[in-house]
Length: 621
Image (cartoon, rainbow, N blue to C red; front, side, top):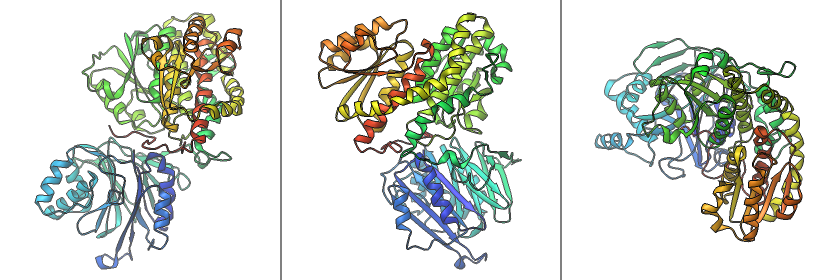
């Protein structure tokens, strides 16, 4: 959840750290802080100054606070916090220091056994200034270093052997002014390299303009980078690791808002391109042939699978629900969709004939990673779908496919969601063809329409101003109901989630037929109901559900692909989208749902890119 950035090199660290924290702020914005080591190059301690500055709130608060401070130094660490242990205030902000304030640490993750460690450290005379689990870790490293009279990296190694939980950390010491020590377990950490300079961060966004060469640390690895250009990586058990340097394909433009006011709006309007990019190289428009390397190289698994289990969280879980419908319809394989957070704790039945599909935008979702590890231990084949190259899920999976949505900065997922739908649809079509379970005309029809999707999404985006006007009428509502059936039932869930996330309005998504089993009791003239009523195989049933809402004087916002006389009579507002085959309607119905949430949130004065209490990448349980 939190964002980490660090720098060691010949340049001033402060501007690199501050700019890096701004790019990482989507990971947490409860507080921010930096530690700068101003070293003369001498090993004499009294000539090295370690300055730590931290403030509650966003990075802008920290930037203002440090304007009059000493910001010199060629080595430093920074942190943007999403609060877990302790309130969002100055004292709980990172970096944290030991009693002598000569070692500083930033941390992303949760130390599960911190209470036991803290009690023992207090007994040994350590004083704690915060309520965080992280401060326990820096005191533990200090204690181990003192007791064993060892190097900083050895102290980190020994201390982490006592730690239970998840962590990505970077440590610097006033007494070791030529190095940074970093380590990770179940939280992401990447090292950027550029001719003797080193950048360390939770993801590549803080340093993408400086270097394209990176090393992704694996679990339980410790890296030591030095000002002489050395980079040494070892495991917690002290085994040497040969670094694998990768070259990035991202660019700085992906991280800018361009002409848009918010990242969320930019990312909504990027969906024609992100869907196209996720199809490119996999679906040939001329031959209409789908080729996915992860499937082609593992045909026996998909031909012989008894069951598919899709694991995901949040918006990715909704994409997984659509994937379930597609895989069962086209591939005729029994498919289940599970919250990864629940799956790993209920002793699930997994066999060697199962395929587990893990879906995650970041590829770092902690619950999904833990569920993957469980599935692999039980012999299942794991297929990963994620948006970030080099992420933990991509490395842990047996095979997989990247979505090519590009960097998604807005906390509420938009383009990454439709990119996930793209990959899941291609996967279902390929599996259906491989197993001989999809009729040729169905395959051709869906592929034809997939090729048209970028154009259809672009056409759908022209309803932008229309949705903005509808939002004005409902931005003061306290509750919303979203209804959908079939392929658009997951979209009702997704629409409700989007509204909750960014506008803080309570909303519920339901399968429309389930409305009369409870939610109908809530409907009155002040309760807006968004109904997805596209012309499909169960259109008549949805019309009946709309009549039930109207009979209770409910206000209806209908999302349709054809204005019929029935719809005109029942709906207070109609949003019309282009027609496509039934299985692909979620690509288009998602657009007005995203726009409606966006405009309601904006009109209520909410920060759509950084909604309260949320972070982009959920790397803790």
